[in-house]
Image (tube, rainbow, N blue to C red):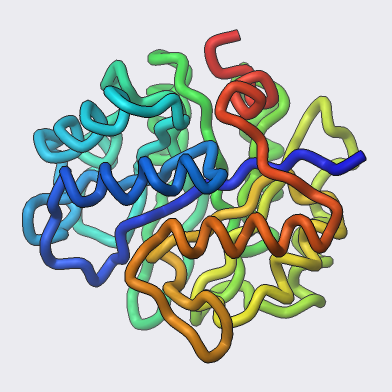
Amino acid sequence: MSKKVLINVAPVAATCRHIDPQAIAADVLECRRQGAAMVHLHVRDEHGALTPDTKLLEETLKLIREQSDIIIEVSTGGVSDLTIAERCAPIPLPLVEACSLNVGSTNLGDAVYVNRPADVEYCVQELLKYHKIPEVETFEIGHTHTTLQLMEKFPMQRPVLFSVVLGHRGAAPATMQALDLMVQMLPDDSSKVLWGITHSGRKNWDIIGAALDRGAKTVRVGFEDSNYVDENTTTTNNYDLVAKAVKVMAEHDCEPMTPEEARKLLHIGY
């Protein structure tokens, strides 16, 4: 029997300088048809900069929800000068079902992604207050250890979803050794934690395939991470990446979850 895996699409590249809600929604809707069960978005202004103003995000989410049951996840992160309260601006929005949670600082390329301990706890408390499901993005093993400590301190819904993020310059590299080390840091208890893979700068699917073989329950694709379909081909549509992810999953005896199956897995609305 094929294993079910959640495909999460992050459709907007950090370098995007024109945010068009209708174009983003149309791309996401086709991603859903190709097999994506979740969409990951940031709060951006019309020029692509991170902002606490949720107007364009809300317009985008409304267009998506009018035609799709895809799970809506919004980031509370990204390299910026925003305060933690400003970063948490999307958490109360009714259409937002899940949010990324970043638990530690790290170097990302030439930037420093700052997540102070007090800010992390503030974000956790906001997620609990508004009953939003966290997806913890771990860029190195210290982030995993910190999250396990947070799970002891706060009543976070089990299982907690970890996204193992590999490939950013300055953080954990996209190697099999790093993948194994990151996975080994997680408790071997699916009632307590689940994990998935995000490969930043991906040009081939080797790391994603290896993650599937090791039990990944989520796979993230999309322009935020890479626009490569294969080592020699890029695309201008996120749904091509979702379609390719489905093919790769089939090669590893996996098939995409529906949004409803993913909601049950993550206890969204249950």
